[in-house]
Length: 87
Image 1 (cartoon, one colour):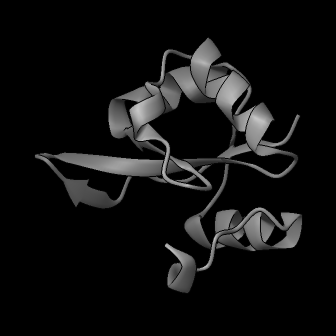
Image 2 (cartoon, rainbow, N blue to C red; image 1 turned 180 degrees about the horizontal axis):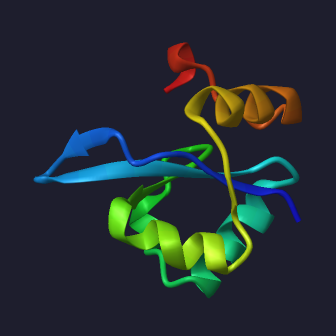
């Protein structure tokens, strides 16, 4: 399993948000998210937006904590990244 989560630095809706991705498959990402009570509405084409308070739970559940740059590089390398022009 290759689930990655970055730091919660993105402000929206009065909270800080992080990104959760898989480097293996979108199916793996959905399964991990469901197992950790993340709503499907948090999915945004190639990642889940997750609130800062969920990070400890996700990391304890097996997500690897990485920097934002590492997360993006890994997602691009996996071939799962959806380019901004296609959003």
